[in-house]
Length: 140
Image 1 (cartoon, rainbow, N blue to C red):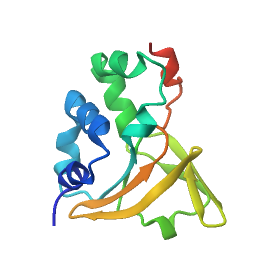
Image 2 (image 1 turned 90 degrees about the vertical axis):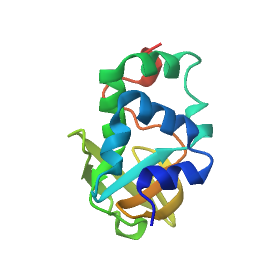
Image 3 (image 1 turned 30 degrees about the vertical axis):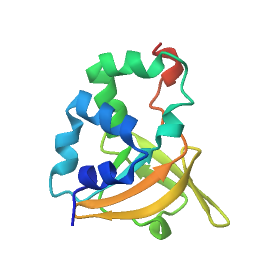
Image 4 (image 1 turned 60 degrees about the vertical axis):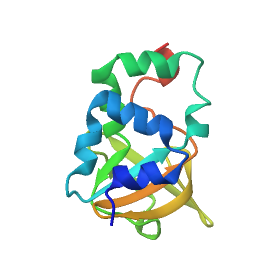
């Protein structure tokens, strides 16, 4: 089975996330045994950011790495096991999980594809980037 990174490459719609992971060198972390759960914003999700926010972020490696670490939790957590409440990210801050009928959200971002298995964890594709403390719009 492939790692989270190799699985993300094969997904086809996570190219912006992969570019950010590579720019921050966080890509190496997600190749280690883990296990991890990655909340992966799709290319479409990144497309909703303020016009120059992503490019500015790609130049600020320290902030980029912090934001990417906020999208990862330790352990392989299946969507069905995500309970409403707080979940600690690898970055150290809490993520807020909510459940409404069959929909699961993390900090308001909806999981659009869940439980993509990898050798070192799971990927949940989400419809918006997760924001840490400062909105990404302020980066631009």
